[in-house]
Length: 293
Image 1 (spheres, one colour):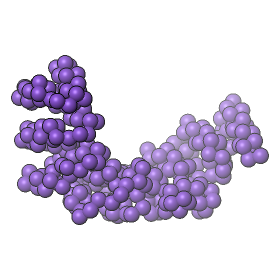
Image 2 (cartoon, helix red, strand yellow; image 1 turned 90 degrees about the vertical axis):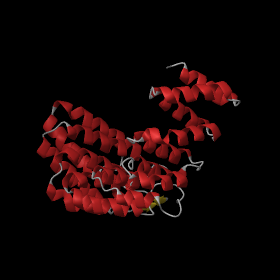
Image 3 (cartoon, rainbow, N blue to C red; image 1 turned 30 degrees about the vertical axis):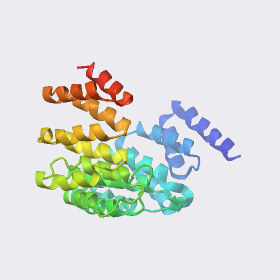
């Protein structure tokens, strides 16, 4: 029955295309109240074509209505997240309280489910008040309610802090005593953002993560090293890793990046490794990459 009603509303919404003003009014009502996600998203798409002020009003009203009873009107915050994403180019400073509330919204279904909503709110908040967003980003980076699959909203918090050149919280995160389960994406993103780390601090970071078997974290570490101005100084570490690692995905990635660098000394080292490599999988990867020189 619910699916039938949703299809009927969707059909009506589309049928009003020849009367855009009426269609927009109907879309605004649906965006506030519709429980069928497909219908609500279709209403949002209709409103995106309208005048900016009209769209902004509809988005803010719809967000507030759904947020008033979030778990019932938008379980997990998917629609509120879409509304904030649509609001981003239209947001005003007066929206800061709404965004702070959104960045602090937690909803528990089968585990905490509003991480993407907090991430979207943080991005908007950073557009409007970057100092305030920085405080929320630090809080979200330290928050235990980070999605173990996406790393959100902590991964977005890392990017926000990096965009502000606020690197100390990222360094603190990287140098924690232990790595919590499900934080690989966040840790990798933090590592990538520390490419300007003082050279004297790098050995501790490399020692901490250079032998991990977590491929996501390793990608972050090597992206950090490759992005540095003094990256040539870390070539011996990278070549030593290649000689010893059994992780073929990381091996293939690093070999490809090194070959693409066109550094003659590095290419010579890779050629010697290719000539002596006994692991047939590694040897094949080297041959294929070096053939692209």
